[in-house]
Length: 394
Image (tube, rainbow, N blue to C red; front, side, top):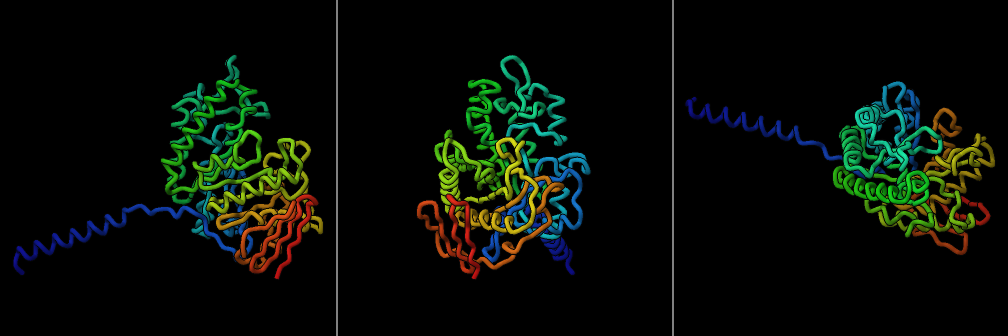
């Protein structure tokens, strides 16, 4: 073969090899939204466990389309919440690659268990929030502090931390907590005064906008944000511009001097509007009576739950609340607290979860405090004044 021809063939082969290598190096773009189906009840999972999950637990978790691993996840067995969350996420993804997994990060509270936070605060102890007297501001537990997100370098650290974790192929987004503490006046006014509280809120708004810009294109951002509060113009919906959707807790709690049914009706209306606009909804509902020592029903902590006839009625009622709100990308988690060690529903499923549901035939209809809605395989009647519901499966 002529030398020139041979040389050209070699160049061509090298070129093809280079093109192939370039194709292999192109990063895979994450599919942002979770899987969704009306076939059965669309479920959400949200839990914490400081030690490693067992194979049985990972198999159980892999059945959920949307999962939040709470603070402390794997922190004892893996050395930190960051490592523990990624390890658990990797195990779930091995069974169900389509599961969407959220990394928990509080927007302001310095929860323990994050090794990178500890390193940052060791170098910058002044990054913690203090009052006008120089005293450390604390949570009601009297020991947990806050990041001072009114400071530019603190927000920069927070954003870099979240960006780094979401670079993991096993993490699909971020669960953002304590937004309401930042946005309503009382919580920080009572700790650091009105002027500093306003600075914290301004820092938060900047940080959330930057978060959306930096990682929002490829990562799911779900905030604990929709809540019926007198301080909010539209039940927190005005802040959804930063996020892909909202988690909900304390949904029946009652607030603002309203009756139970009026409070719940306003919450239902806010969720219905948000879901119809395409926002992801992760609805957390407490199965039993709230614990006496729970702080304003935080985390929907519950008394011990017995799986009996009363439980079935309660579960039907909660699922009915969800179903009159739900649209595509809405998920529900009826539970009795987030710590798996004390939960009566952890690792369990119930008949309502396994029955055929089918797509809704239209939006829910409301007459007074009674809601009705039909699905392909289910008719729902919800009476929030009398706290009763009827699920008629077809």
